[in-house]
Image 1 (cartoon, rainbow, N blue to C red):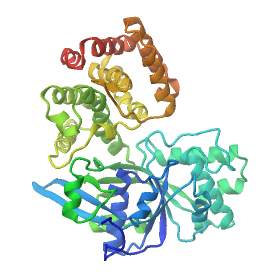
Image 2 (cartoon, helix red, strand yellow):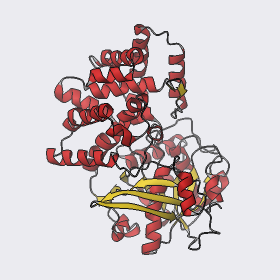
Image 3 (cartoon, rainbow, N blue to C red):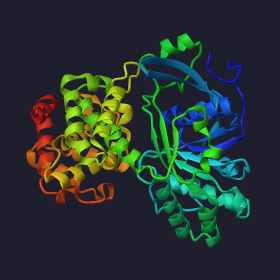
Image 4 (cartoon, helix red, strand yellow):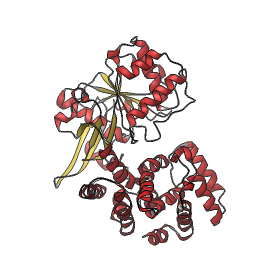
Length: 482
C-alpha cells in the first residue's frame, strides 16, 4: 500500500502560495516541514508547488503520493531522545519545466502565489549567458526564475502588489542579493523593458538566508523495516536531525507573513547573518566537505562512523581545531562551543548520514566551504593548512570514480566530470603526471575565482599528498599527515 491521500485521513488541500525549486531531501525535511507545521498550528493555509530541476520522471513520483511523504526526526534534545515520524502535507503537486513549461508559467498568473523558495546547491545560482527568454525552459535556475517573474509582471501589468518574497536556501554568501543581480543582468541581456527591472526592484524582496539541519535523506538500509512499521510504502521517506535553524536577513515585515517563530521554530529574522553564516559554513559544512573524499576513500560510508573512527575522527578534529577555528573572528569560547556541538551532531546515533549523499557538487562546495579557510589560514599564519589541502588531494583522487575496484557514483557538473574522466583516463602513474593533474585542477579560475597555482607551495603540497594517496594508499598517507 503506497502513501497517498486515499489512506491519509487528515489530508488537506491548500492554495499554492509557494513555488519551490527542487524536490530534494533537504527542502522536504526543512522548508516543507516548517510550512506543514505552520499549516497545522497557525492556519498558514499554504501549499507548495514543486518544480523539478532535472529532465526526468523522479519529480512526478511525488504526485503518485499526492505530495505526501514521511519525515523521521531523530536526535537528542536536552538529553532526551527524539524519535518521531510525521506525514508532511504541504506539497500540492510537482511539475517539470522541461515537460510542463506552460503549467510552470501558468503558476506565475496566480494571484495567491507569494513565495519563491529554492535549494539548487552552490552550483545553482549562476549566470548563464546562453539562456534566452524564448527557451522552454532556460538552462539555469536564475534563467527559469527570470522568465517566471517576467510572465508574472506581464500578466498583472506591473502591479506592485503582485511582487514575490524570494528565499533562496543555497549555501552561498549573500544568496538573495546574488540571485537578484543575475536576474537583473539577464533582464538587461534579454532587453526586457525598464519597467520590469523597476518592478523587480520595487515589488519583490530577495532575502539573504542561512539554513542548517543535517538531512541524511532516504534511510536505504532500514526503509523496509520502517515502512513495515508505518504500514505503507513511501518512496520519499526522509530522515532529518532534530536541530534546525533558518536565519533570514532583511526587512522584518517577513515575520508577519511567515510567522514560524510563533510556534517555537528556530527561524530568526536578523539585520546581518554574517556571523551565523561564516561559523556554520566554515565549521559544519566545511567539515562535511573535507570528510567526504578522505573518509570514503578510507572505506567509511557514513558521517557517524567517520567521526567515531580513531584515525579519521582524529584527522577531522585536528583540521577543525587547528586549521578552521583559528581562521574565525568570533570569541574563542563561542567557537569551541559551536565546534563541539557540531561534533556531537555528527555522532548522532539515530541518523545514518551517507557520505555519498553529501558528495553532490563537491567541487563548488569545496570552493565555498573550505577554500576560504585555506586562504585565511595562509594569510594569518604565513603557511598552508596541511590537513585541508590533504582533503583537496583526496577530492582529486575521489573524482577518479573508483574505490577498491568499485565505481563511485559521482554527481557534479558534467564539465568537471568530463575533465576528471579525461585526466584519470590518461594518467600514466608518474609523479610528473600527478603534478600536471593538480596544476590543471588548481588552475580552474572560473571555479576558484583565482589561480591557486600562484599560491606559494600549494601545488607542491597537494601534488605530494595525491602521489602519497595513490602510491602508498589513503591509510598510510593520512597517518603521515597526522
